[in-house]
Structures are given as C-alpha cells and as structure tokens.
Amino acid sequence: MIHATRLGDVGGRAPVRTAAPGRVCHHAGCATRLSVYNPRLFCAVHSRDTEEPPPPGRNRCPKCGAVLEWTPANFHRDPKGSPQKLHRICKGCRNAHNHN
Image 1 (cartoon, rainbow, N blue to C red):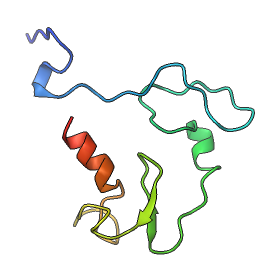
Image 2 (image 1 turned 90 degrees about the vertical axis):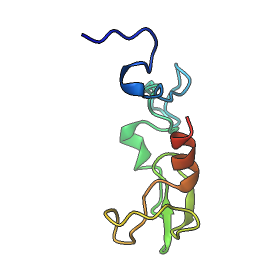
Image 3 (image 1 turned 45 degrees about the horizontal axis):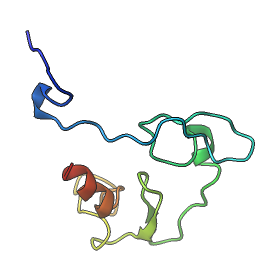
Image 4 (image 1 turned 30 degrees about the horizontal axis):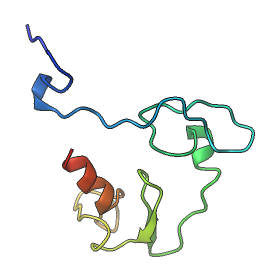
C-alpha cells in the first residue's frame, strides 16, 4: 500500500497546475463557473464559438490561445502528431509545463 504525505509524492509527479477558483466564462451572458483546471477564459461550450480559425500557416495553442506561425521556432517537433509534424501546444506552454 502506498501512502502519500504531500501532493505529488505518489509516482514522483509534480502537482497539477491550476487557475484561480471562482472564475466565470467571459462569453456575454454565460454564468458558467470555470474549473480550476481550465486555464482558458471561456467554458467548453463557448471556447470554440468565440475563436476564429487561425490564418493559414498559423496555429492556435489550445493552452494559452496564442496564434503563432506554425513553425519549429514556435512549436516543438512531433513526428507522431499533426500533419505538420509539430505539437499543437506552443513551446512556451510546453516548456512551462515541463519545468514545473
């Protein structure tokens, strides 16, 4: 039997990153309370409605929402991933996640 004394003790994993509690979706008229595990400004229903598709050759990071040129300068390589062979999550978000 494994006993954990602190968050993250089991399996050597770092604690999960969370956002501030009590946030509400920014979509006009929506009162949905956002999960602390949702770092976005909109709930799941409105996140796709409010975002325009990125222009050709650019990608919207699903973590931070930034629209960046879809090149290895902004996104890590991923041979098993997208048709462009790049991760969908930007380097900034992936690096922040890997260093915490």
